[in-house]
Length: 148
Image 1 (spheres, one colour):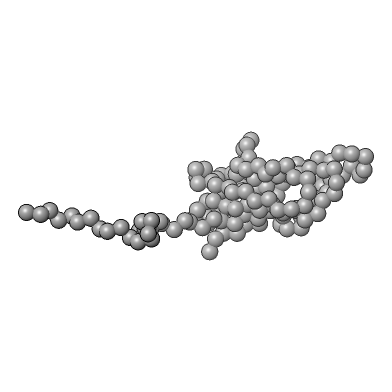
Image 2: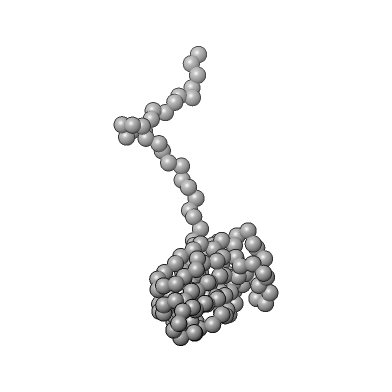
């Protein structure tokens, strides 16, 4: 069963820069996740920048994110793949966001969001496939016997 993580609970109201609680990923076998950002509500003239950070201890998340979503302005769903197989020290993930508002209306930004990460299951080993010729038939087997 693939690991399912809720990095930002669905329905979270975001009105200022912030971050979510760390989530442990040690139980993951593939260490590859399909991350889905969903914006349920928004108002005009504002932006959301969301990123995912990694940590070995759940405290120090470093200076660079593992993944940055494209800047968002409207409701909708954005999916990105996060692969931490080459970062074995990462045991925790945390989402961080920055919001910005401009224009002549209310100065406080407001988004209602959710962020999930679902582990991508391992790919099955590829079974050799018999190739077909143009007629859709398997080619004749070459004889390995030598004549005397």
